[in-house]
Image (cartoon, rainbow, N blue to C red):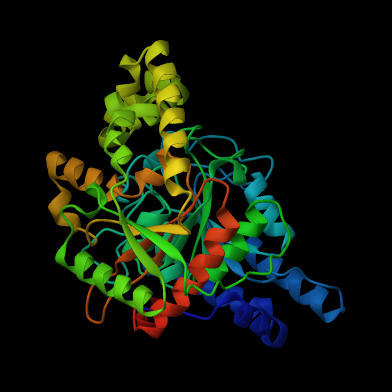
Length: 453
């Protein structure tokens, strides 16, 4: 397993000293190797090398280059990239016309100098938290090739973990950035919904879709988030966490944890307490009502069916059956059902805003389990149970429109585990500052990314 743990500031030094062609070329060599066959649906080798050469020419000429200049970044295969076909991990869209323009998220990365190395594999149409794909293959978990990578941004996380990209851009509708980040020992960030532009992406649920980064550390996620949100390079304040108040929800998010997850979570809480964080157990009784928002498939079923219904009429047999059956749940939902869900969600969001007010963040396990084995998901019932379990904790932030970061907290010799920090709606930059401080405390305690080598 290859892991390049260098943060962006070190990679920028590499570009300045040795050139972007060297850095991008190394990433492409790995992406084009047999290990990358199921990680990418399309590697943009020629275009990426040309972009890297252009960065080196500008730098040699003394022209100022962007803060991400020469940094290889992969993008999930539901973002439009000019000149490329957007497949969304499906053969249904494989015959579509190439995109005429970059999605706004991609255009913003390019404006900062990032080199887009390819479209990464994903769960078909982003509709699962496990990362399996019967069309393009399932990327193996970098820590154990018999296990899933997590989804739906499966190839995104694996591309970063294996050094095929320095960072990846995915989408998160119910956990699709944070689950694979957690299962692959990486950091990931899901923003508040209004923060990022989702135009130019294949939608899953327009109410819940967000665009977020996956990287080795939260500071790199924060940098990418700033550009994805349309801003300039931020000055990240690594918050001193002594004296902060973190809520520990005493709800279903702590139920039925794998022993590895429970042990890592307890160690993380101990590290935070030792760093001066005040941990407060909070019932969050209102969270018990959240499953009501998933009735009949919830907003995701309704909104995905609206987008797919004509495609299903023409090509239902080309869909992954496990994805198709979830989309088709939206067929039975009425307009009244849909409006009721929107109003119910708005009420839950209002309740949560009041409950969050006394705290700097909420802390909980990102996923209740470590990555399941691929072979254990062959049965449809087992697949459904595993998918629901993987999505259970992460979905909270999507349903309530909260920003959420995941940080790796695995202990030596064990599979990756993620720690989730959740903030108030719109408090994205504050949450990232806090997460940066937490990352320092976790690494000092021997948890997380310092172990990924």
